[in-house]
Length: 373
Image (tube, rainbow, N blue to C red; front, top):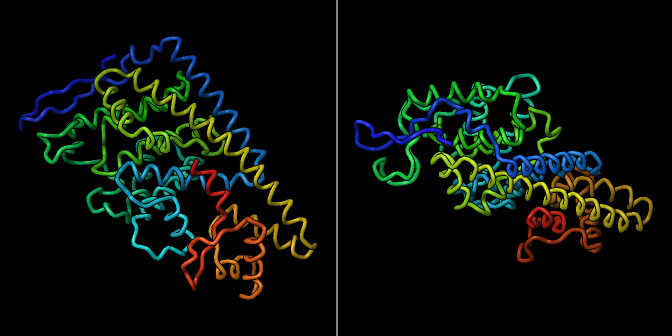
């Protein structure tokens, strides 16, 4: 299904010129693809339903957002890990990392979900999202946050002549973005299929100088959220894309090489795998919470009361320290240390680094491990 072609430019390089979008043939899907999309939407619905019975759905969501943000940033070359981001958000990160890339992604997703409650999913919204993602980020001085590019960019290669892909020139980009916005408002397609096409078409247009990949991956979740396929933004595909990074690039290349169904099969495989994993993770979290609640409730009544409250804080932020317990639990330093020690004895908390003498950090390791599987 053709979506465009490479056209030689006056400077000698070949840039991709999109056809009028979408071509009617693009929206004719074979039965196997429709069946896969139906299965994907069924699993998304199941995942969305499970989040309503989780004891701490917002805590579950916050951890998955950190995981997705980490993987999305790593696809673009960020080296920071999920633990680096947790440490930075908790204020205990003393290492030189690029974890702020992850935190900007989290901030942008939070902005997007809030904004969509009062504003439509449009090109303006996408520009606002990009502005939130890139303002203050390491590469923001190259990105022109919130503004579509006014010059030619390219993907791969040291020069535009050696690039692996050259997106549309600026004037063609503007036309393609107009078509893209019209397609956003098409209500005739299955949302899960439409989200996959939107992502691939956005990456093909590549309308920003930097941050296109992260913005495009945010669009998948936010589009499904806006269409009410998700009541909470709980489906994140960046882990799947990171695990299959070269295949992710290959399938996006297949899309703008007019093999659109190759991309859609890959994308739907990612939705199905991710939904399955998230459903299993939610079950493990519920089981872990029940197990650790039993341990805490076996303590004396006074200790159990403060212990239950502390466990809830750990689901929100699975890293802690004496200073953090003093702040969140309103304990004195000795009382905070006693509570931490009790959780270590119960096998709930684990000392992060045994070589550290002062300012020790403890992790709710079993909880964090669920998100690293």
